[in-house]
Length: 297
Image 1: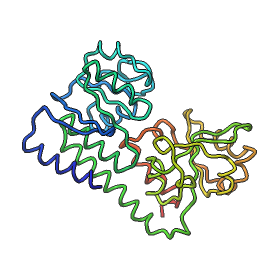
Image 2 (image 1 turned 180 degrees about the vertical axis):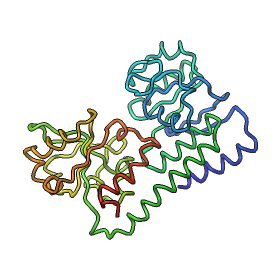
Image 3 (image 1 turned 90 degrees about the vertical axis):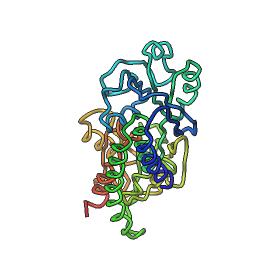
Image 4 (image 1 turned 30 degrees about the horizontal axis):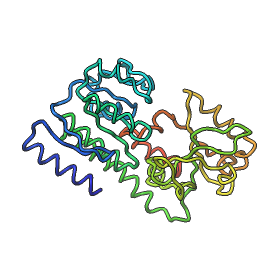
């Protein structure tokens, strides 16, 4: 929250003395100088594309990776990045994700390419990044307005969720995939992940909240899930219109079928593409989660 307030103060200051170059600190803690207003932007991760789309700056995107659903020239995989292709496009700015992409940032800098890392691990950090991108792209007031609207929206839901007694909150398990019959683990979200933040703000009690891993994601055993017996399952979908098939697969799983969530038919399927991205569009899922957890009450 303090960083968000600091960013808003920075916006007010920049509105009075707006000019490039500007210097910002990205999510990798790097100090980055933006020499001029970016007109040619490469989004080297799908999550970064979503920020520009949310700000209505799609026309600034000249290229994306093969994993993106935005129509633009392709630069290849997320890792390793295609340096030759990127250099040939002569971008003003490159947005990347953190984690496994961080080593690629060094390579980009060695080629004189201005690069900003966006790697939010909470809802508030997503809003911070929205404001940061707005500052970088020269639309700070628009970014501030959108961030404030999102914050007001999710806080309205969070306030309702806060009033639910702790012993009445639903226990939630997030399944990144449905394990096969011989697999004993499944990836989920834990402490330090933006998805855990969404679940908590929606009034859920994440069964993996005590654990963490890279960016807050980690594998947990099926035995642990059974021991916690969650009230609700959130399951990621990788294929459009596969909700019923996924529910059936979970219901017939030799281990998962014993769960309270399965017996009570409280399996909720969400598009994994958006679930996997810490972006402004995902903040709206807090309300969807709340409605699934408590029927919109």
